[in-house]
Image (cartoon, rainbow, N blue to C red):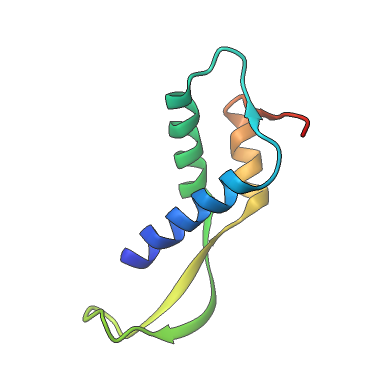
Length: 86
């Protein structure tokens, strides 16, 4: 679970740092944050090699997570957002 939280935070940083801003007329920052969080959750995929984590006791081998950009973009458009020119 901690790995997923770390991946989610990394996803926020990556999404905030690149690409065009998401625009929705009349939307607040809170609405963007809610839609952004929901879309990141929906677009999370497992991937990468298995690795051993000696700090967890629930299972030694875990997989990482990544955000599928296509799913994320489709989700944001579904919520009424569009990417502005950059």
